[in-house]
Length: 418
Ligand SMILES: Cc1cc2nc3c(=O)[nH]c(=O)nc-3n(C[C@H](O)[C@H](O)[C@H](O)COP(=O)(O)O)c2cc1C
Image (cartoon, rainbow, N blue to C red; front, side):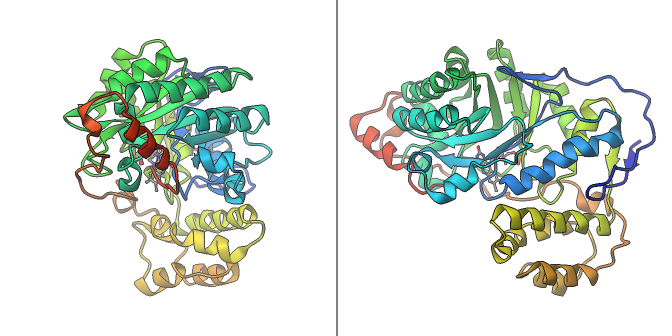
């Protein structure tokens, strides 16, 4: 039986949940190099989502919200959306905004996407030498066709030497100031071209501090189900560093089930927290051995939505319109399962100012209770399986040809999403 806790209002102490019998932590803290992550939960990097504003919201629920679960203050890891190494090296204004952290954000985590060792080293150097990050995650999971077509993202680990050289470059730069580097990847390109076990071994040998597996192939994109059994295999294969499981965690119960089933040292949670940042309260509680869960009313959900919009306004240097354009994509996730007419939903999805947002929120039935089932389960991107676009002859050999080397260098330009 779940004991429910009330969603905390901003800047107030969360309402305490009823005490629960078991309080033994489910897992020990996660050790990522020198960083101790008390609650073994990681916010997955999500392009266009996990900016400083959203991370702040998740952090608040992961720490302050946890007071409701009885083990307050436990920290998790909240990774930035992916940063293209080349754009960082070029210091484009948008990239410099994306690598910002709140003053109280600790550890400061940045995900890099890269396809060549030299650019990786240059980008990692900026983060490390200029003291801009405490943790670097490397993205080898992107299934977007315009990336894989050039050999980047989830296509890259197939070329084992290139993969090794990129990981080595990042680890070498990180080591200069004790900044740990982790690797995030998929199972492989498709069922006939699995890469994760070799990639896991290589990452471990090159000094990565942890590996995270999104248990799908690139061909699966976001369709079907994550194959948690692959996380088990990876855990059996990579034994000296933490293995993190990722894919289809929609609730704290799913996270606990994944750990029980796979033996993973921690979990990485993406779509499950879209429009539901208080999932981090539930996750922290669950890993602390508590069964307190947050089940907010619509009024409490809209307080969070409003706060998210405010944080985005701050993130965009006071540009309210830009913040509102950003919050629009979150509306359907926040309202999932609640009764709200299509007219108000449509208007919310076109909102232009915080005042408009307030006016529209005021028309909702704010007393509506958490809808239960209707609000649970999958949210966000789904999609269908596909044939993975790859450079000509990519699968012929795990070695990189000269032509392929040139092609892959182009893969770093204008990418987004994982
Ligand atoms: C909107 C969106 C953007 C994403 N962007 C990134 C990214 O920038 N880097 C990355 O490694 N993965 C990215 N991913 C993949 C997620 O990090 C995660 O691996 C995937 O969603 C599976 O986890 P989940 O089932 O918990 O969502 C993205 C996923 C989504 C839905």
